Length: 242
Image 1 (cartoon, rainbow, N blue to C red):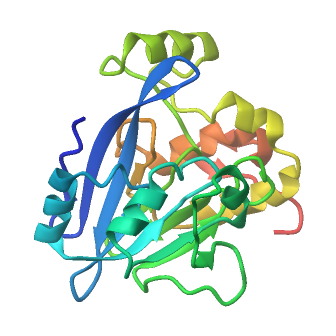
Image 2 (tube, rainbow, N blue to C red; image 1 turned 135 degrees about the horizontal axis):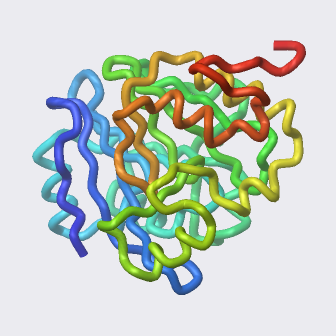
């Protein structure tokens, strides 16, 4: 398993990728590591805590935060929490029902839950099926998400390329089809996506797509246009009441 941490932005953000299987398709899944002021590390959607991966983290700083970004990216967290018992685990309460071994210290979306100063938590409301929170890293203008967007490319395994071509997600960023089907409160979701788009996003990192550095804000809005409404010339028509 290749989980080598590679720098994204100087001495602030690193990424690693690993293969995962999902209903017979083999995808790449990404972990994002942010070094906070003081050398503490914030680990988003961690992989298995192998000795090699832990050695890489130790060279970067002290693991302080572990993030379960949505209902689905939690499988490796129990083992990671055991490896780093002093770290604070944050995630959605809905993930507990899917993994009896999972323990969460702070629930995303609840009042009074604080996050590192450099990271702004931005939940995707109205999609309880996903129950995802994204994070905007202010110093680097990086939006860190998970399953809010997906895309396959030539670097992916043939099984995922095949599925992506059938679903229109090959070489084109889009939301997962099941997320589209399960988005219930579209006005609420539109307000949440519009709030994310209000940030000066310079790059976008999600779990199952290449890093987006070319017009990330525009591509995010285009993928979610079914809730946002009209999308022309790089401007979003906000939903009523915003």
